[in-house]
Amino acid sequence: MSLENQHIIIFSQMQFDGRLESTNYTMAKLLAKDNFVYYVDRPFTWRDYIKFKNTPEFKTRKPHFFSSSNCIIETENPNLKIIISPPVPSINMLPEGKFYRMALKFNEWIVGSRIRKVIKKFNITNYIYINSYNFTLPTLHRLLNPTLSVYHCVDPIIEPYQTKHGLISEDILVKQVDMVICTSKELRNKKALLNPNSFFIPNAANISHSLKTLDPDLKESKILKGIRKPIIGYFGAIERRIDYDMMQELFAANRDKSFVMIGPIDRYYIKEEEYKAPNLYLTGPVPYSELPAVLKGFDVAIIPFKKDEVSSDIFPLKLFEYLGSGRPIVSTDFNPDLKDFTFETVPYCKNAEEFSEAIKVALNDNETLQKRRLEVAADNTWEHRIIEIKDLLKQYFDKNRQSFS
Image 1: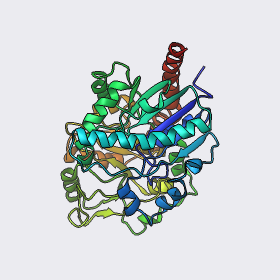
Image 2: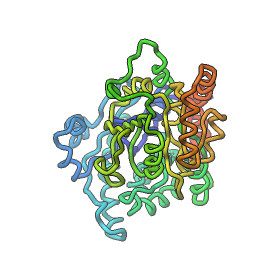
Image 3: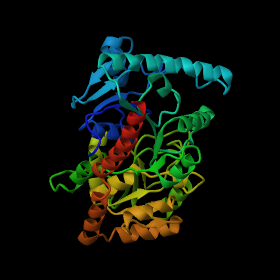
Image 4: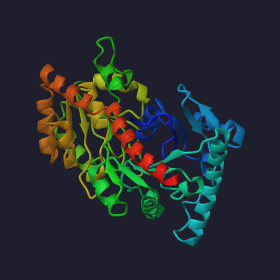
């Protein structure tokens, strides 16, 4: 029997209303189909409170920041509730050390106090606590005393603002929780050195959403209007992972093709005014709801990630989203483990020359190849993954509950 009718508190790095679909919130929604899930939205900092004061995200949260009796945002699913924490002090600029760790304890107390009031309000006793990649408050679970504590590790820590304190904090978190779930094999191998109860369950795709791409009545996204075919497209954040040097080679070698990159641009790594080519189009982000219409206009979908010291830790959600749309895909060989899940439906390229050749092959797509991609996608849905996650949670939850009694 799978995990059901249990209370689960998820403390997440991702906001519930983020512009892009996230592993964290997708997992919460699926767990809430037959469990009671409380999704603790990433706390605003004092700096966020000022910086984002006029944004829709701020206005959504404003009534809930300072009222413990009104800190819940209801969702379409009555089993899924969003908990809004009071803003916490901005402490990331502090140097690592005793003073930073003291300030961090204060932030944990603020967030923990809000969660404890929710626990009391709903009379929650035995429950599962999942830290979903929010290593900024690594010992928050110790204030809450859950029956089972879990760290869900969805990515390596590589951004400078994360590594400053995050590497230490994540190690503390991994060592203290009962169980760690990782989205790549390499992440699992690394976390297992600190916690033997570390497991690998990869990302997946929302196939029902991706399949909308195949609807003959669906029109291509207006954002692609006027762009010359064939369109070689990327959908996702434009940040550290992209192999920008290789992309410049691709632009030059494929003048007859349009490269469209749709997503928010991290100006720490690249600036629009510097990253340009006659056949490159940077459109900015679009809502996740428009993903099928965007993919409808792609002739080939690409994952041009660079291969570096952390690339084998990455198991991208977009790989399965692309597969679920039926679109041909070309990727770099940044993570060799991906081949085990895509069964020769995706070419993994070592350099720009191989990538260009793979694009040419992909443009000669046919229904047989498309059908095979859809079959692979069907085996890598969130419905499949959530069963694995629930079975694992139930195993350790039942064991811990017996030891508590």
